[in-house]
Image 1 (cartoon, each protein chain N blue to C red):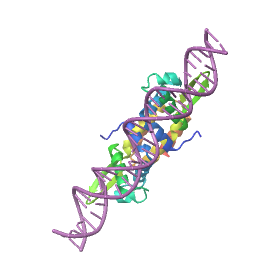
Image 2 (image 1 turned 90 degrees about the horizontal axis):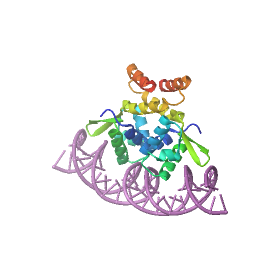
Image 3 (image 1 turned 30 degrees about the vertical axis):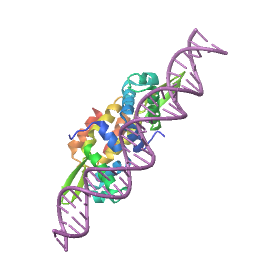
Image 4 (image 1 turned 45 degrees about the vertical axis):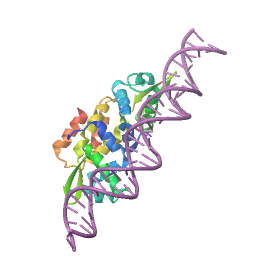
Length: 108
Length: 108
DNA sequence: GACACTCATAACTATATGGTTATGAGAAAT
DNA sequence: ATTTCTCATAACCATATAGTTATGAGTGTC
C-alpha cells in the first residue's frame, strides 16, 4: 500500500501535468485543489483526475478538511524508482567516481 | 545529446515492453534485435519501434554490424532521473536514516 | 432553508500510443 | 544475379489517455 510497483510510478510520472503537480507538492508543500488548479494550465476536473492517479500510485495523500481537500506529496513512494535505477546502474561499468557523482547529486 | 530531459525518460520508461527491453540490455548486455525479439512477447517491428524510442531518449545505443543491429544500454542516461528524484526528496522531512536508507538502496 | 463554494464524477471528444501485417532496404550466401 | 536473412519503415487499427463541459455531492454561510 505504501509500496507500489515501478510500473504505476513511471506511468503516473510520465505525464508532464502530473509531474508538475507532484513537483509543486514536493517543493511548496501541502496544497488545496483550488490552489493547485491556479497555476496548472488545465481545468479543475483535470487536476482532480491527475491527483486521483497520483494518489492511486501512492505519490500523494489527501486530507479532507471542511469542503476542501488538501493534497501532500508522499516522497517516500519514490523509493521503488530509486531501487529500480539502482538495479539498472549496478551493471554499468561501476567506476567509483561515477557512483560518487551519483550520490553527490542525490545529496547535493 | 548524452543528456535528456526527465520528460523523455519518464515517457520512454513508462511502457512495460520498453522497460523490459531496457532491463534486458542492462542486465544481459548488448543484444541484437532478433535476440531481443525472442523473449519479448511482441513482433519484431514493435521491438524495433520501442528501441527507436529508447534510442531517442538516449537510453540505448545501436551499432550496425553486417546485417544485424546490436543495441546496448546507456545507463548513464538515467542520471537526470536520479537528479529529479533527488530534488524531490531533498524536501521531504530530511531525517538522516531516510537518506541513509536511500543511499544504501542505491549502493546495495 | 436557500444559496454559495469546493471538489469529484459523468459523459464526451480528440489525439496519442502500442500493437499488428505488409513491405522495403541493405548485407551475406549460394 | 538471385535468394535469404535481418532489421526498419509504412499503413493501418483498437484502445488508452488527457483534456473539455456539465453536473452532482458535501460543506459552510446567510
